[in-house]
Image (cartoon, rainbow, N blue to C red; front, side, top):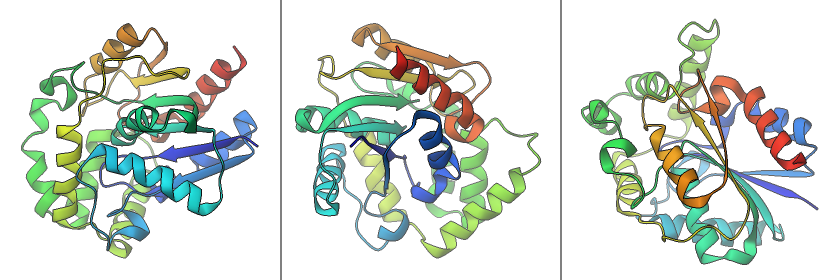
Length: 249
């Protein structure tokens, strides 16, 4: 039975996928879709976040085993989640069958100023100490290009509600940032098929990071001309279609 595991990024939880998991399941005919939260996020907000990407990958491996899912897994992961997926492929190569990585960035392949655009450095203070509304407004502005979408305010209100129900602490934000900044991937090509997806209007991470990985890994790559960092939010139908086409090929 095919199991797809969905992983999100910094300060995000499973509910931030919105309607995408069902859309994706229908598009590709997936038998099982599992959305995991990292410790410190979502329902696990009372736990301490891991301070290394490798520990986040170990958590995924252990949690899926405890939940009764058997490998191999296909992993669809965004941003920090995609870093975790890459580390997972190094630590437990037998766990994974395919990787779809969205708007990720990895040292040593890309420099720090591409992995986090310098104009966003001051925003880190707001992520740590701002109110839930300030944090979520900032994240939505940085990760989505849907500024003219009618339901954008509804999305923001929903995200603020999530933050109120499962508040992430400043310490856990710092722990996750530390994990992302300190992680260095191996200079080897993943042993499983990889599809890289990128938004060309990503305001958070330079899309050059995706292109650089594609060059080193010699893997399939698709770029969305108008989407931002949160590709499944900006155009989930496009994401599902790219993956469906890739699987068919």
